[in-house]
Length: 252
Length: 197
Image (tube, rainbow over all chains, first blue to last red):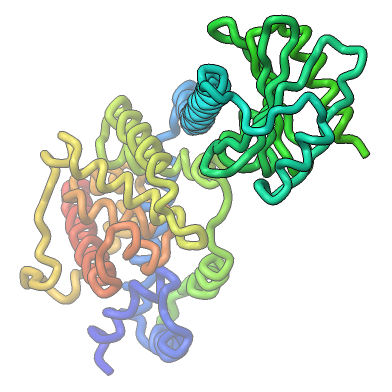
């Protein structure tokens, strides 16, 4: 092999990027050829001279180093902060939106349920025949509903109270049949509406509730199987008393 | 007359391919700060060699670090971080005003015919050891030659690493390096002739 071909491989050899298979024969040639070994020596010398002349020739000032280190640090922190804050803001906004939407839906549901129950109460009182079963005796009224409703309930004993039972009728609320009982307290009429189901269905947010509007008070609650609403224009304390009696009557 | 024996210093450094294999298999991983700050001084040095101006070098390094930080998510953990940083520095330089001014198009595939060997007078050997001569020769080299010599000799990068840093094929690294060294030698030879006169 001519010296020219060997010299083409000299750079890789000097740079340590020569394969071991090439390095062996090349070293052998260098030992034998003074011209090529002089050339190799020269290249190595220049390489080393470049390293000592150029490597770490220009050193950055410590201020500049500090500035870069700080910028990297700050940028990372600010990036982190930006992401964190914007992430948090988005999450908070979403949560707020969900809360607002949920509470709005609940609010609308409550108003709707209240309005429907109030309508039932007023329509019943305005009717020429407010009740279908006219009886002061709970033992007459309760059996009357048998066969008309897919559930049964207990009515409270009214002896020695300000309340009187007028009677009852079947009503429909939210596409399901329920019992409406009319009580009086003095001159005021009070409707007790008993519905099937618990508070998990539609208008669920309305059970339990206690609210007053347009002079009417309503108190609702839910048992394991039935939902109750007491509505009337009597004072809230009286209404609550009747509600308590109904609650007590359901307990076995 | 006995046989002339030249004491040829053996390349003491172990062949770099073994070192490289280890470096590649372990790869770079860690936070940007942990990986980048150890390279700060050498990147600055190279930036200075490219721009030949302190404030321009600082601007270049700063822009490089900021770009690299922003693009760190795209850096493949485990690949060569030093080559990646150098590539950013170089691209930043090439698109800077100084870089555009220095831009030289190199036709690596069709080199101008040059003598295969250049005579090596003893005087070149002397001049080569002179730091000032080397420095001024490096400064006079066109940027592509200057950077490939700096990456190979000053930064001691492997051919593979240089290929990644300059985004050129391995074969081009070798041919460009060879031509850069010949140009360097021509410059040193000129200096040595001036010294002789």
